[in-house]
Image (cartoon, rainbow, N blue to C red; front, top):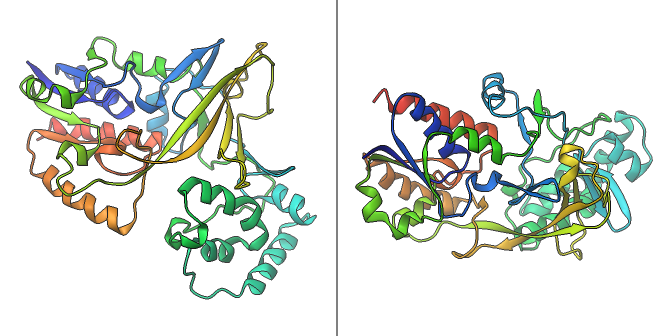
Length: 366
């Protein structure tokens, strides 16, 4: 008999299991995949730690979270400075003075602001009726057409003029020459990859891989006093109200017989005609110097039940549907729903840690 059955060995489930184990509680962690770590899993290929489910760059301003994760790995000084490629042009992201200089030949924040204000006046948009109008109202037509339109349409699988305006509530615009994508105080990549972090968290805890909760539900429910479920909340309740919607991502990963393919870890392709949204070159996350490199092309994909759910589509329709499932969840005394899929919410890694630690502190009080 276990105190807790934890469904999912991603960051949320692994932290919760570790904290309970420290308190003397017996946990069983199961995962339907053949590896631990969920979507932060890194796999070593040609001596390079490959982010199998997309790039994960750790960043936070929460000192407590930073100190917590540093128990399990030493972090390097990697700073996320992606670039955008539009046809044969390259721009810095987020939109900053380097971007504006390349676009318009301006040098000062005053000149850049004047150029954007001029474009906003020419656009003459009142209340934005769709994403296209919202984006133009925020950053002007030039930035929208080169760096937003194609990327967004690939990401969502729809024309920007058909997407609701709320998707782009704001766009990061900085009037400095700083290429650091995040403003957080702490940032880096764990040396040796994320999988080693999860291995340390789950040390001394029973783990079963290739073990789908829904294939063994009756047996598993009897094994523990409480369940922490980090899978899709709608699936747990048999989709009784219908399916929550997601966007999915597929990856084409390739080993190349060259030292350096693109000179940066992250290159976004903002042109609609290029089918992938970005290329990740994994060795640059850890400043690799070997003779080979590994790249992953990322394609935004329509989600179906047989595909991995990545990004919750938090529009009014889905949020209302989630609240129906949450009501059912709140009535389950022995099941706790956590993480991105259990709470139908996109979480950065530092927020996952905050939520998992908060839950671990709360459950033993009740």
